[in-house]
Each structure stands twice: as C-alpha cells, then as structure tokens.
Length: 200
Ligand SMILES: [Zn+2]
Image 1 (cartoon, protein in one colour):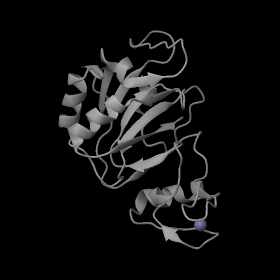
Image 2 (cartoon, rainbow, N blue to C red; image 1 turned 45 degrees about the horizontal axis):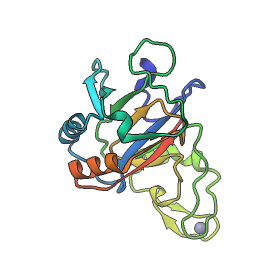
Image 3 (spheres, rainbow, N blue to C red; image 1 turned 120 degrees about the vertical axis):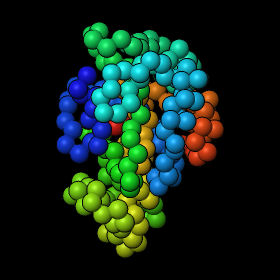
C-alpha cells in the first residue's frame, strides 16, 4: 500500500491511481484537533480499525461509511480489505501542516481569477514557490488583482488546506460527502468543510 502514502502531490505520478476524495476545512488556514476528529469519525462508523502505522493515520472504512459518502452509480463496489484485487477503499487522516498547501494531481486544471475568470495558465510553474512562500500572492495577468493562490477558483480539481481527510480510491465525482458527514466534521471541529478530488 505504498502508493497510499503519496500525500503532497508534488511529484506523484501513477497512471493507475483512480483518485481520492479530499475533505478539508473551508478556511485553508485552520486546522482541527485531529484526535477529537478521529474519535468522532470512529463513533459515527465512518472509519473503522486503524491500519498499520505508515507515518500518518490510515483506517479501514467503518460500518457507517456507505451511509456517509454518497456514491453515484448503481454498482458500488467497495473493497475494504487490503491485498484484494483492485483499488482498496480506505481513509487517511493527514498530519497538520504549518501553512496552507496545495493538493493537486493530473486532474487539476488552471484555476480561474475570482474577479475576471481569467485562467492562470502557468500555475504549475508557481507551485514550488507557493510551497516555500506561505504568503505568496498571485497577480492576475488579465485584471492585475493580486490575491493568495487559495483565493483563486480551483473548482473541485485541487485545493489548499492545512489538514486533510483523504478517501482512497474514488474517481473524481464518483462520490460526494453527505450532509451527515459534513455535519459530523463540523461538529467535531467547530469549522466548515468542503471537498475536492485529486488523481495522482
Ligand atoms: Zn483577473
């Protein structure tokens, strides 16, 4: 399950990666208290048994998982046992990052300026700079407004945060968090949440 450890999306390339559903606080600057959040997610049956410690926290899906994540399509197959064939569905809880960081992948498209909708075509050239400069601003080449990269519109194809709950493996758009799940996250953390998708 080494593949599951790819987290920062910097140099991750795996054509076989189906994708992941990423949940993160709506405000990219805030970070929940992870132990409390994990406790609440276990209690609700979203996550089950902890998987071998791989430098982060990985969990099997819990008994309530399918009622908290809405899968589209009529033939949902969740493989919840590692080692079986096909993508293994599990949940990872990231560590807390000091500054907002971008999670992105091969599905990520150029973000749009929130003012004029111009696309930042060369966004990939900026990523390394954003990683090391927490307060970097990006000036729109069209309307000349400058704002931090997380205030650009990434749609649901990538995004910034300091803390992530990652559901592997989910094809972009194949599953969405239910209101009940967002409610559990909000109650356990005191903050609003949003979601997006990343394919390595
Ligand atoms: Zn603009």
